[in-house]
Image 1 (tube, rainbow, N blue to C red):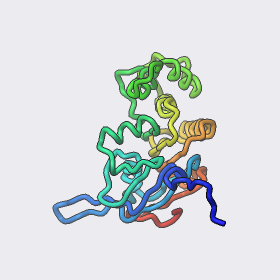
Image 2 (cartoon, rainbow, N blue to C red; image 1 turned 90 degrees about the vertical axis):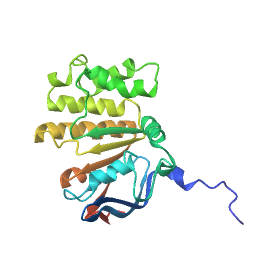
Image 3 (cartoon, one colour; image 1 turned 60 degrees about the vertical axis):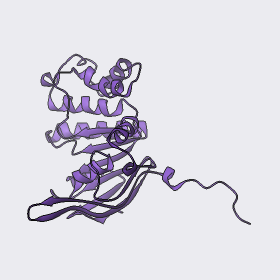
Length: 235
């Protein structure tokens, strides 16, 4: 007897689906292939590291996954939404609803306080109350006494804690972290990683972490390895 239960659409089962992804850029000497035929799926709640040597295409892949750049070929579905069907504004709306970012260089606005930096994604999204959630999240990362400090008044580790608060304050379903400890000393970087994984576990967020650090990658449930723009393991 045939199963009469309704089928679950495939796109709802994964946080990210990538198929045949390629990125090529024209150069005077010819075309440069940065990514070639990359494909994988990431389930909701997974933690995945993307690892590879410098120039292997890691950061380009992350930009494509987040809809910050457009591919030359292939497709990215973010939480079931095919990014190729959206214009730049549409991709920005998807990111505002679903995505948080942590960057190597912190990417804080120097003219805004820690609190204002953490409030910014909520304000851009149009939330009526940005201050309350931002204060609460900054306290979670240990910066309850630093709300009024500007980035220049904070250490590197404190700036990355503000960046973590800004990433998690919107309750994203997907978090992208690009070399989050790259500008920090070993001890500070380890503290930031412990905080990142703790907050990620508490929120149940899908984590995609780009790193060249094998030890850090091993903290994730799965590792995707890039070499010369191709996915060589982990798919």
